[in-house]
Amino acid sequence: MQVSVITTVKNEGEAIRLLLDSLLQQVRLPDEVVVADGGSTDQTLEVLREYERWLPLKIVLAPGSNISTGRNRAIAAAAGPIIAATDAGVVLSPFWLEELVRPIEKDGVPVVAGWFEPDPYTDFEVALGATVLPSLADVDPARFLPSSRSVAFLKEAWEAAGRYPEWLDYSEDLVFDLALRERYGAFDFAPRAVAFFRPRQNLRAFFRQYYHYGRGDGRANLWPKRHAIRYFTYLVLLPLLLREIWYGRMRGWLGLAAGAAAYSYRPARRLWPATWRWRPPSRLRAFALIPIIRFTGDVAKMLGYAAGTWWRWQHR
Image (cartoon, rainbow, N blue to C red; front, side):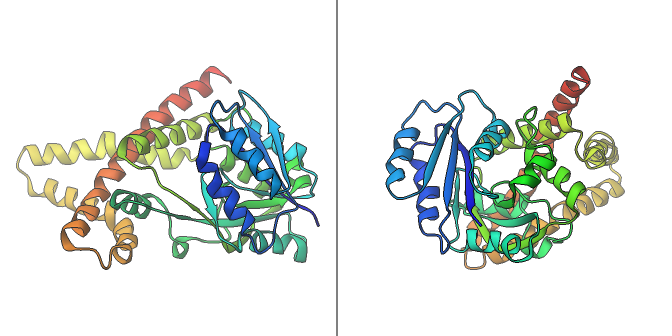
C-alpha cells in the first residue's frame, strides 16, 4: 500500500534539513512526502524544493493556517491510503516508517501510535526531558495517546474521526487521538518507531510551550480533573502548608517535604540513569532543576487553562 508522510512547516529554515535527511535514510522510503507550508517568509521553501531531487516531495501552500489546518490540507492532498504524520522539528530513526506502518499493512489496524524521545543538547534540556516526558517504561500501550510527531493511520480513519480540529492551535493531536480511540478502540503501539526531538532550550520557552498546552486543554475541555487537582494543590493546599510554617509548626515543614518528594520522585528516577557519568556539581544542578521546571510548567498550565476555558465559555 502507498504510504504518504505528512508534516507542516513555517519558517523552519535550514533546520528542516534534519527531518528531510532522516526521511532519506529510512529503511523503508516513503512513497510520498507532503509538506504544508503555513506561510514561510524565510528560506524554508527553497530548502524544500532542493530536496525534490531526492524525495517524492509535494508542497502544499497554506498561508495563515494553523497546524491542524496544515495537517488536514496535507492529508487531503496525499495520494496514499496510509498516512504517517510527523513534525518539522524532529529526526526520525531509520526504522521509523517501517515500524509505524507494519501493523496497518500486515494486520489491517486503522491507527498505530509511534514513540518519541528527547534529543537534548544541554544540561538543562536533559533535566527538562526527564522532568516532563514519560519514559517507555511509564507507558501503558492500551492507554497511550500518541503525539502527531509519530503516528500513522488510514486516510479513511482520519475522515471518519472528523479530521484534525481546526478550531484548536494546541492540543489538537490529543483531540484527534480521542476521536480515533472512541471510534476504533486502543491503538497498536510501535515503540521502535521513534521520533527524536529537542526539548525547549530555556525556562522562558518552556513556560510559553506549556502555557499554550494549557490553553489548548482549556479550549477543548481536556483533563478537567487533572487541572482541578493542580489548582487545588497550589491555591489551597500549598497556602495551608505555608501558613503552618509561618506559625512555626513542624507539620507544615513535614507536609511540604513530603509533597516535594512526591513531586520530584518520578522525574528524579528518570534523570538518575541519564546523568550517571556526570560530574557531581553538574548532576546536583540537574536534580535541583526538577522542582523549578515542574513549578514553572504547572503555573504556565494553570494560566493557560484559565485563558482557554474563558475562550471556550465565550465560544459556546
